[in-house]
Length: 631
Image 1 (cartoon, rainbow, N blue to C red):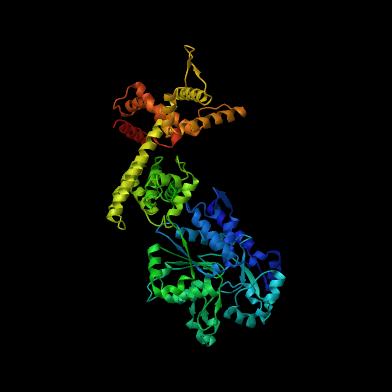
Image 2: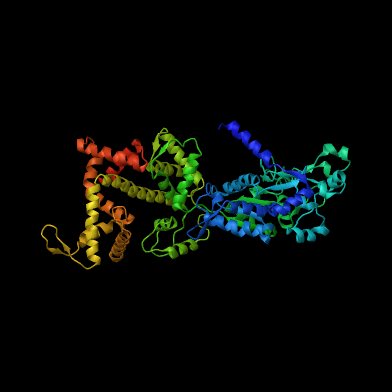
């Protein structure tokens, strides 16, 4: 289907969704669909909730944010539950400005943009439908037509609470166009659109001396004063400020704390009382979610100013820190690259992961807990199992520093350096070493880091390089070991025979001489040590293997080389250690003989077919691992 056909279908769908009727017909619709009368805060909450919630490791993952926001599940759960959910229930938090506070490039703007785009789509669904008085520039709630003295009766009959008063313009229209008959007032379905300034607004402060409050609240249309005779005639007023146009939906207030006080007081009146002052009119009711965002330094400066004390209690601050998980950081980089014009460039496996390791290390604070260093902490945060530590230890680490993640290297810097590495290699392919080199070179030009921070960051680059060395050797190890499949299976069978004898306190029989032998402790330890199984932990590990074998046997399955991930890793590492000399010769010989060349080509083919490399990055990897093994 071509793009023009899709545009046509969208237009047809919008026509189908349109609805227009009298206020009397709207009341009938309310009886069938009472959710139509929900507040702006409630609409935002239900938009997020309707998208679905997943429970992972006891934490809520909201699908609404899934494709754009990574590694901020805790912050988002707090935001949704403590603010949106409570506000949807008309609790007092809805009378607060929501201020997202966090470091640059931490996801604040992305989060707000997702809410705005989400509301645009949601207003086109049945659950998110919005209805307004037709012809009203503020898309006013039709229920404001119900007189104050009848609202209790209305709530008893419909179960819907009405908040807010009819605007001056619609009050005049009710009398002049409809003769005071509210049942005849025309109501229409509206669709939120930031571009069309319907239900979604954005306010960005400029020079405080020149910016006019009219940008927020609208202004007098001087060209009509002669026609209507007075500035206080609502027809002579442009209800086109951001607060007017964002009514029924949400308004983003960019860099709120840089704004002049007079703008902030209007926001406070709106959030606290549900109305604001405009022109020479009575207070104008509005129902909208105000979301602002700022960084930590500006927020600290704001709260330190005594003049702002009255504002503090009217703002709910939600921290949006940097992501602290390597896997999620890697996803951020992948997404940013996919959205760029460099998505076709080959990025070798682990290049983005190594960049993510460096970045996360810069954001973590030194653990106080004994026996934990930054690398172990990083692994625990990333969901890896670290010997000697459990879920309780992870929780304690997370509670040590409430402000962890509010500083460190931002994703944009890393992506800039990856882009620089790609351009330097002339758009062919880059690996982890290219990325680390580029990050290191960029630190000298990073204006916001101190000399001490630079030294720390250089140490983290060294740590990330060490992590890559281990990954690179492991990658080549796996590719080589697959060429020795038979040897790997034989080694594992030998290990399992010895483990079974050890656990059952039996002896083994030599297949050649027939004599009895004690289990080969040296062999078992040489394999177990490859994956860090300590002397004290060996018994538990061996018993775990035996239990797994029994479980497979009960189900009629054969325990094989792929049945236990950690054991397979240990066998691979042991075999690789035994093959190290062969690998050294094969990867470092400048003029390999025929058998070495054949082995090299097999390994390269496996790296390309099964590990995600291309021919350039596979050859670079082999040369690098060869140099590591020859040191």
